[in-house]
Image 1 (cartoon, one colour):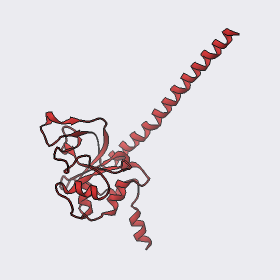
Image 2 (spheres, rainbow, N blue to C red):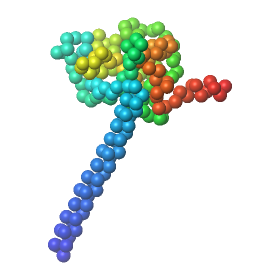
Image 3 (cartoon, one colour):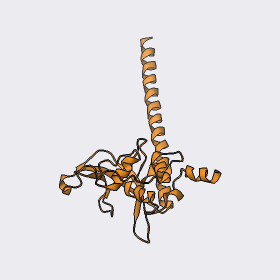
Image 4 (spheres, one colour):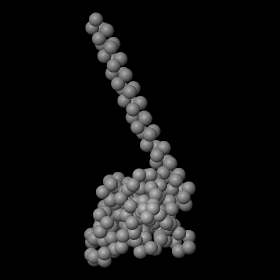
Length: 199
């Protein structure tokens, strides 16, 4: 009887291990296609995938930068005519659901002109986002990637974690397109256009 209990106990432990491994594999595999699809969509729409890391003190010498934990995948679009660029996080680009970054881009809310320093940072704050450090903090900071034109990216991050280039967002509010018009590429369609067409 005791031997039977031990065998059953071992069998249960083995089954738990197998189920745990299967669940972990399913979880890992379910995320991988989304990332590769988002990356593929970025490339197919003329963008380039960039993985950037957050850094603090970018206004100081590079050896004094504090590289922080984590990373974010962005899609960078460059306009060949003038070399201007815009970056948007892959998740923000690819989600068919509304995000605060997409809604902010579509709304083209005029800048209120308030605050000093970096106007893109101030505009991001006006819309309810944060640009990590931006022009508000004298030490500086942003999303960095070596050997790129935009070595330090000033990105506006919203409470839902949707993320977009702060300068691209700022310029678009004034009708200036940098890189590409994201309204033609974002998976979530412009809800304001639909309202105008219906009225």
